[in-house]
View: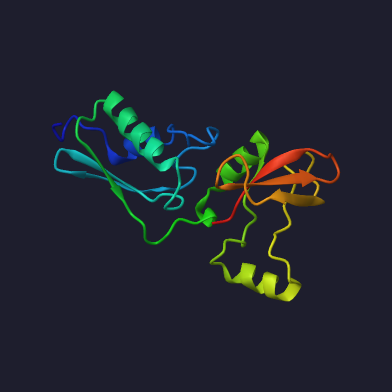
Length: 174
């Protein structure tokens, strides 16, 4: 693609904002901040992606969706690169995405509770409780309990609200 006619990196970032996460379609790959870099290398567009975790079953679909969208937009040569370090963390999720999750009925990750976060370790050591206080996305109550470490996808846990009695997914901290 000639330099004069190819889209800018800024435009490509806007396009990527329309690529949904296949497991949680209300948030995009840019909402998750798994796109680390977008750059032209000659006539090839290079998109650097950090998976949410190394075993995420959605990674292949995300890459395919990114590549397909770019081809539909006229980008002929695309190279996806995988960047594992630094490892992705739920702390990277945008505040807008957290609100989208809540509106969709998924409790977003509790700030400051990612496993590598010092605050999480300090709270755990002081309280003996390794579970954060998770707010129900439906009624807002914090009287919730974890039902299972595993929810509808590997990145979510199953919770239930003690006030409205509704079950819900919690986007686990990674």
